[in-house]
Length: 436
Image (cartoon, rainbow, N blue to C red; front, side):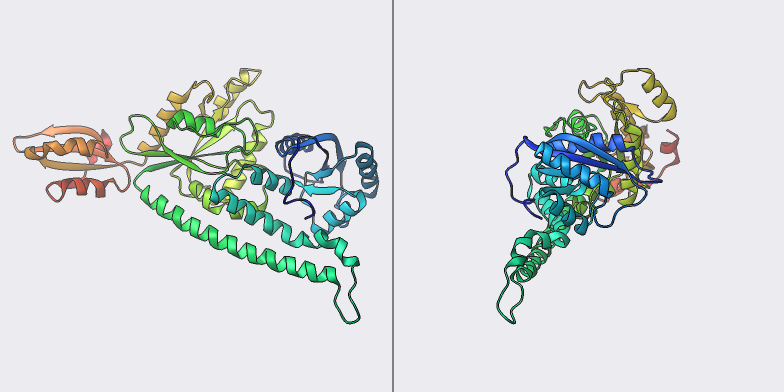
């Protein structure tokens, strides 16, 4: 795509925003989506100078919009001296080419805008590889217009058009780069799988939700991590995993994941498979919601739909309403408490409600505990401290010859306890522990 890959970002680049409303469109209202588009544009260092909307009965296959709206946009581009027109909907390659030819300026859609932001925010090798792969896959069917100026350079008799040759060369190089990046991501994915295997004995919690709802702030509150926090869209791209600080009976790990958003590019979701596997592998999802956002319900629906697409619909989940200091009407929180009886209400910035969130996490993982009974000789009493780090000791019984521990243990913990006993104790199922 022309000028879309290597350019200097400037906050003074003027942009026109375009949104449409289609019949029977079940997504977020157009105005709300356009407000979000404005935030995306500003995050990508564009300066929106005007917004245009149209209600369409059907999409024009050549220009997406109706001819009258295209003429209106053309006049606006000239009047504002706009450098880019940003559509809130995905454009077909042909529509993109036609519009750029008419407007004589860049035309991008919401998926490409999101890709630009991801490219700006990528920091690690994994994130950079994921974003570049998504960019190339998106750009491949649109490469022809990158070389339109060469199509006028004719060769001699019997020779092919020079522009066509360049297009073919560029497509081949792009496909080669895509193959190379896919191999790199497979290697990274194998490394991640090894890391996840090392955590199989821990209880894994993933922070998920719409972008900019405060997941990283909650991550820092729960784990004392130093995760970067910024009041902007997609401030976090790389999944970060840390251990929860607190007196948990066994390791509880929390992962901060990339934010979700409406109309997320399909290629981007596919490229971020390795990162989003943290969601699929989690034992508990903390679905974080910005309680002060005017459109938080649509954000919740969008996040749930994307989580379903990721195959995480069956994972245990806990709704967490964050930023409870922001709603103008306190009655909103009371209504939400009635509508979501199991939800937790917190303010990540001030720390309010974090203690209750910890207790809620504890209750969730305790539901996964199973009961067992360990019988030790008195001479093995020194092993009790090691067992306590792996399981919850519900009750302890003493006899003249033995000590009996009634435990609640997480999955895989029986193997760990067996290693501690080293064949010198007895582990059996215990109904007493479950009653305790």
